Length: 216
Image (tube, rainbow, N blue to C red; front, side, top):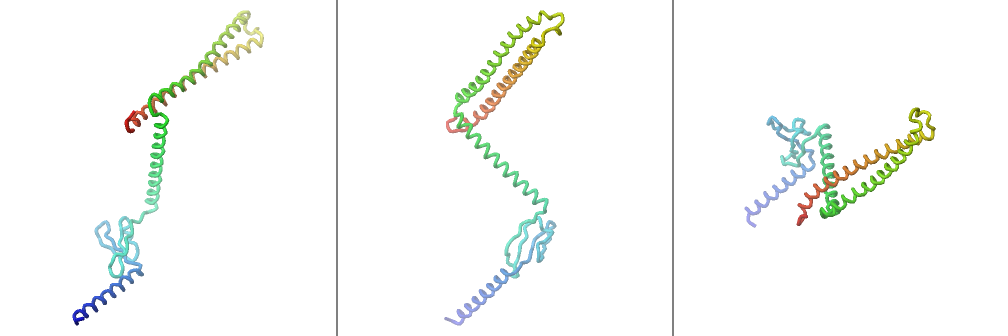
């Protein structure tokens, strides 16, 4: 090996040793914090810099090499806002997953409008059947009331003289008819709710059917 080659090798080895030593020192050093604040000032300190809590701070070793970066430091209020936003995002993601699951279940249950229409008709028919029984009961009560009114004709001038059982039957008949009428009104409302539900489902299903392969 020539003298020049040997000298080059020595300088290379020396440089490697110095660099390695500096690197080792940096690894054990707590580091110097450096940043440029909002006013454009370049700041350094041996601890996180208060004027740069809203931006990244570089942590430098004794050799000037960057060891790591520290992200913006959040205040308690900012951390609370960030956590609240995270919870809102998670809640929205859950809502979207649940909505997709409901949509999938809806399309699975009603693959066509014919099936949806058939179930609507069945639901309405069940309510109509219940209302039919109630209306029949009203007719029976009306017939009973006619008989009671006929008996009360004898006491038309002074209804207070009517026997207590007869007056009680009149009161019970009136109460029963009112209850049946209220029940029938409730069933009419239930029919409207059924149609509203099926109408809303059908509007949603039409969108889902159109988006599915082949449509409906």
